[in-house]
Length: 353
Image 1 (tube, rainbow, N blue to C red):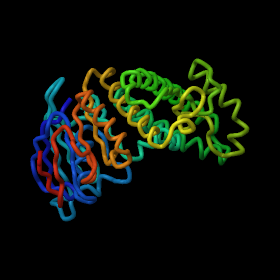
Image 2: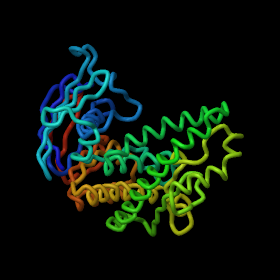
Image 3: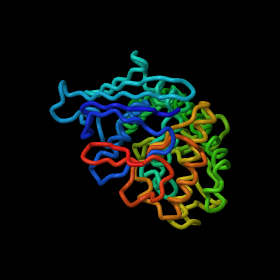
Image 4: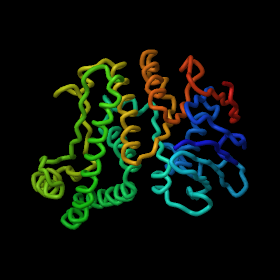
């Protein structure tokens, strides 16, 4: 899919304007605070995701806006043509072709992947970064995933309280078991697609890279439900002592390495960043393979964390895949950008090339 135009009204610091986007590569240049990230966030909202991490819906409308609400509109074309509208007040309300629609439906129609500088720490960062990466991929490919994940997190909080009070421990385990098994299976399937995707972008890699999904606290039994109960029995005493659940998707990880060694022990910082870029591109390939729709990539200041070689590799990969891309970056990054260039200043966006 490709976004042909967007329009905003009373949205953060952006001036009300309709923007006709290039259907290929779009580069947004501007100083910090100019509004680049707000443009990407608007596209993220129009594609069925929520605000960026650390932001909330009530903070989106411009101060003093009528009714305290923002309006965003956008048109998408490709595998099908559709218009999406977003009304943001105390919450985010989505409409597709004028009718109310769920976020998961929009995500499946307009698959967008958003990456930030934090995602470049996929290789050496905490397991939570890799879990979030898998969760975003699964939420695009499986309409029920986001809901099941919310249900699991609610039960996880209940189980934590049960372990600390020693009340309702068995009951929470019975509710958690099928959710954990389902999420494990979904993440494992996403990891398998990522493996295949890495094979499609092998030229980006600095060397041999393997990935493997691991269940949190698992004994490694083949059947997920059986594995959950067996692992829970093995860790029961430790869970009671610690007062926290030790088995489940909240402790999953995605191994990224060279042979048996983690990539962080094998590759330099620059090469680890290249592996992260390859994983991003592999995620886009996985989405396209699963949904039969081209993804839209939103890259927020990713180039700032790459060296010259890394930026060149990223641009080459973007050109080869021919997806629509929106990249926000500082003034000096991405010299020689092979697509449309936009300047963002004081909330105004204008095309310069």
